[in-house]
Length: 320
Length: 320
Image 1: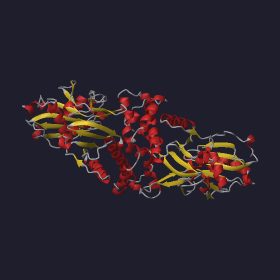
Image 2: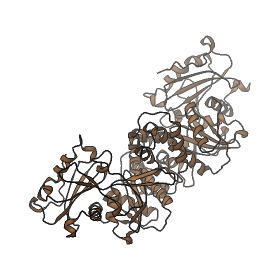
Image 3: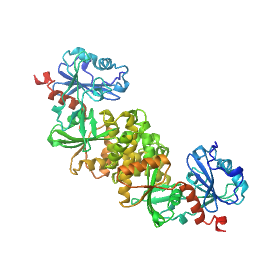
Image 4: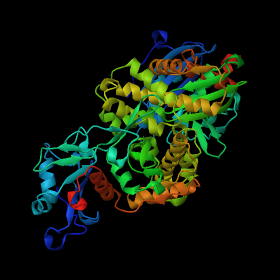
């Protein structure tokens, strides 16, 4: 189960003296551990394919010891903060959602005691729309507060993925957010509908992607425009090797249009937080929509865990 | 392969003397044959699971003989008209699309001679939108011209399904149409995304359906609202037995909103053409959106085949 994911191993495997926090970004597929020093610097980072879907029989404690047992042994008072789906109903312990608007300090950590020492779990965020329908995030709030460190970074934060999140930050508060099932919808359409049967290969076709983005962005809705991924190929006006890129662009363009219609702040600064490939894809898509976007500095999750731990008074060493 | 689908068998198995047309509604999954009398009345009807996806090695002729060999033997001059995916690239012969606007008479039949007698194939329709992107239908045009017999029936025709079609009829012409991948999208979301994992059972929950319709109809786009099928169940505000009905309603509501935004004729009379279950579902959905809709008289496909055959001069017996 453990990956060999040492990225920056601690020298000689011993505990660096200044370690102040073990931060865990514990999601559906992956568990990432950050050993964070007393200035908030990441001293070491590890990851394992130990996301909650991979944990059998509730063996969360074993997975954590396997990832970071040596770090914990070396420092008996090292606090642990965890964010992500580990705090969901399917995770180790359910940390109830906090309603927006919320600052980093409003994320009161949920203390879970079923381990050798307390595991402090970051709660997710919940929002109700005008119809009273809820939306939620869990894990992304930590990345957002890691990327948004002060009011000069107010604006829109976009976290692309299976379930893309868009959030508005104002004066250090998350004041709005929404989930778009873009990535998961793309996979379902590609693998399980007639659109996928038009796809030959999966070439990274920049022209097809651009065309999809622009057509999706101009849509009044996506249910009708989806079919264009079939008809354009049928009429020989889109190469079959470009259908996947076109469909991806179509959905991302529609996501951008929907999100902007919901936010209704044309001037909001946009910051993208994501892995390099998704970040590049959304950055390119926004350029096709004549939108300027910035990319968040790397390490948003670790910085967010550090910040939320501090706001909850967990960083005794740091405060000393 | 043959079904036993005699609905109104000819008496004694002999050829009724007045037969004037063999109409075939030959789609992806099913082949339906209508023996039509010289006044346009359906004398007999048969069906077989011999849609083009079920035909191996191009054995279309064999499938047709198996369905209607006795009818053809009994009347050597009986003309054959076929509509549907049989005229697609994957069918028996590709009948090129006709561009809209188009009347029934503009559907010039494509004569296919690779059979004991000519098979006249109804071409599908094609439309280009303002961006030059094509949309197509094949088979639905025949049902539409069967349901729309005169100008008093002008308005919007809706054919719900895996790929729902909406068409505007004005003065006997199809002046606009569009495809919505609602049904196929529903199946892909239900069977292959996290939304499906919330579904327990598949109860016909009218309240959940209504809620979905209204929320989908009020959407600025569906990518964001899809996630509500998960969050409402997560918060215990939608029974898991109602998630499938809710999701179906959500997509149909969004389809109705999108189509009406595209048509921009709030007063257009709406006629639904579909199998009884889908017809009921869309009729109910439109009522939730405060839209009045009518249902087409049964037998639209056979009436359309008869009408298009007549407009193409194929009904020698009828004209005599």
